[in-house]
Structure formats: structure tokens, C-alpha cells
Image (cartoon, rainbow over all chains, first blue to last red; front, side):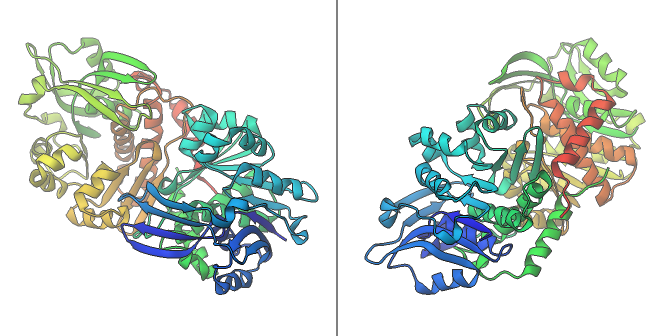
Length: 304
Length: 304
């Protein structure tokens, strides 16, 4: 396997100023693996779903090269279900409901076929579950990325710090970087967080782009300005999926690869938000991605 | 003259999480012209001050090549005085007081020596005063930039639109671009605003950088991530001053120059915020600016 991802596979109810979508496909692992599928052929998901999850959607993921052996199906259970409503500016959202359902008893099991995977993406979940995946690997992966959020900082900081210590990349937003480090300046926050373990800190700023720190080195990738944003759900996961998919495709982990990886992440996220749910991510062409990469180059390249 | 600027020359009381500064030098024209002084030798300010404005500060501006013939001094009047307090995140501030003082009766007079200036920067002021400066020019300047804010959109939209029609560059923040255009997407806002007149729309996003639109072309300049931000006051004006100073130094107005200009603007603003008032801007070395340009290149350049 090129990439192993742990995360939710779920249903979402989404309301944005551009419309509503009920009981559509969502979940961190879904977005991550779909985005990564444009860079790697063989990947594996560890997750849990209920018997209510559409068979056709599972087949679509498999067609994209995503192995589902690690996805436990609880036939008489219901899939994780989240509902949210975005504010007018789409930078903020309110959670309307969270039904954990089968996720409440999730014990991640890494299938044998994925235990030697070199690139591992730990999607946003309880830190203990993320840690469990690392422990189940046959040997130390080449690169582990961790996504988390303020909820785990508020409720499970001790466990979170344990898993942060073991990863190479941490992806969080600016407020979370401040909370985790106790530093307001992101430059100072990065110094504190590097000491906790991760060599790379990726700060996701949504429509304001992404900032990567690696010691004294910094790199900034803007978000592509778009004419229409329909639904920001999954943009951060899609970003992470593009980033990790690209890194896995290079089989390298250096600074130059990391810079390219966040550009690819940003490109994939720009598609994600243009339609509801995973609609736009399902059937992109390589030429769509190439075209958008060109737009990024034009947006940021200058010579003085 | 290389550059003509209209704007306030004033006192500020500033309170930020990093400290307080009382009755320090401020004003849009002060920041703009100081930033521009690192790019052009001869510039002119049109403004008004009271007899209370320190002689030493005026001499310092003159030493930087800033001609003050257009600055009316009302000996028995008091200079414009603004007080503000920044929130913890420094992205928001509350105005504590605004004493217009001599500004209440300001009638801008462009001195003869500046009437042929090719580059004109209209700092944030009543649209009628900005328009009056354009009318006083001997001939159409090569490039006019306009800075404004939501206050003028709320109170003088008709006059504002008149002056917007006559300028080449409009600099506003993202919320103001949305208000002016009635479009939420900045891409769509730019289309509407281009039709109002300006060829270039520069959207200032503070710590999130600046975005420039020119028809279908877009360019993004991030703000340099800084370890310490002491005082954001004047950052937008400093940005505009660096931008216009650089453009005036090239004697060109094309897209490539504009891209470089916003990088220089962003660099100058990065110095501005590192100390209170104009302290850091007063005595920069060319080598300081060059070094920071290199940091910008590293921050944004990538090759895929």
C-alpha cells in the first residue's frame, strides 16, 4: 500500500448560503482517500460504518484503488452522521447534530495488507485511536501525518501529546496552533510545536491558505480565489489527502517535496469546495489538476 | 516629483496587547510617504496639521525627500488625533476617540511643484477631497491609487463612486470589496469593481496578505509571518506607500510591475508592524529590505 488512512466514513447534512444537502457522503477518510487517489494507486482505509452505508459508494472508492478491508461494517448499526450549518461568510459553522452511532465503539484494526505502509495519515479522531494505528504497524512508517482539532485539546490533551510526539506532520488551524503552543505568533507557536515532535507543522487557514513550518524554514500556499464556493466541508481533509497522496507518490519526505505537497493539497481543496459533499472530487481528470496547478503558479510566482 | 500623496499627518494613541503608545506620530500620509521614501527621492504630501505638530518630525520627513509645501500648518489649531485599542488577536480594533481638529476644515491644495506628478496616492479621506486633488493636477497622472474604507461607503457612496471612476488602483479590504460590489466571492467582486473604473483592485487582508486582480489575472502576496507584532497601525498605508513608491521608481504601470509592487508593499508593511508608530519605518537600511525580499521569495517560490 502507498498510503494508509484512518478516519471517519460517514453521512453529512450540510447547509450553506448556496444550498442544502441531506444525508450526503462525508467523513475525513472519504475526503482524504479520494483526494489521494489522484496521486497513488494503492491505498487502504481504517474506519467503521453501519449497514446503512450505500454499497455503490463503497464500490466507487474501491474503483479508485482504495482497499476497504480495514473498514468494519456493523450490519445492524448506523454510520456516523453529522449535521452543520455554515454562516454567511462560510468561515464559521455551527454543528446542528452529531450522531456517533457505530463510531462510539470503534476499535481501529489495521489489516495485514496495510501494516507495512510507509505513509500514514491519521485523520481527526480520538488521539487513542490514532495512537493505536501507529502501534499496529509492523515497522515505523516513513512519514506519519496527524490531523486533530481543538475538541481533543480540550478533552484529551495528555493522549494527544503522546500521539503528536510520534508524528512527522501535524495539520491544525491557526487558533488550534495557538491553543496547543500557548503562543499567539504562529512563528513562535511553530517553535514550541516542533519541540513536541513534528518536524513539519502545517497551519490550515481555509480561504486564507496554508502555512508550513519546518524549523526556520517557512512556506506559504494560498487558497485559489474561486468564483463560487458551494460547501467548505471536507476542504481540510481534502488538502491533507492531496498533500499525503503527493508525498507518497514521490517516496520522499524532504522540504522541497513538502512545499510541492501543500500546493497539491491546496489544489485538491479548491475542487472540493466548488460543490457539495464529495461530488467534485469523485471524477476529476488529471488535466483539471494540471490546469489548476498552472493557475497557482501564476497566482504566486514573481521575479524582482 | 516622483509621487504625490494626500492624507492625514496626525497623532495617535495606541493600545495593543504588546503595550501602549500615547500621542505618537501617525497619519496615512506619514506612513505612505515614509514607506515610499525607500524607493523615490522626490515626493510631495498634501495635508493639514496644527501648530502642535513637532518641528523635528517635519524636518525628518524633509530629510527623507518629502516636500511639505502642500502641508498647511494652522498655527493656533490642533492636529488630527486618533485613539484606538486592538483586540487580543490584533485583527480587530476599537476606536476610542477621533478628534478631527484642523482636519474638519481641510481644503487640499496641491502645490505648483507637484501638479505634474505622474504617480498619485490618494490616502483614506473624504472622497470629495480626493477628487479635488485629481482636479488640481495640470494633466492626467500616469497612475492614481485610491485608498478608502467602509465609512465612506456608508456615508458618501455617490462621491466615492465618482472618484473610484477616475483611478487606476483601488486598495480596500475584503469586507469593503464585498460591500462595494455586493458580491461575496472576491473573484466576482473584482469583476464588478473593474467595471467601476479601476484596472487594478488590491484587496488588503492584513495578516492574511494581499490579493490583486487585473481583469482575469490574479496575484497573491502573503504577509510575512513574524515572531512579534507590536502595532498594526499604519500597515495598510505602509503597504500602499511601498507599492506606489516602487511603481513610481519604475516609471511603468504594467502587470509585472504591479506584482513586484505588492511584494514591496508587503515587505514594507512587515517592518511597520514590528514596532509602534513609525519607529521602525524611520531608519531602515536598503539591506534590511533586500533581506526581507529574499525571505518572501523563499516563502512563496516553488517548482513542481
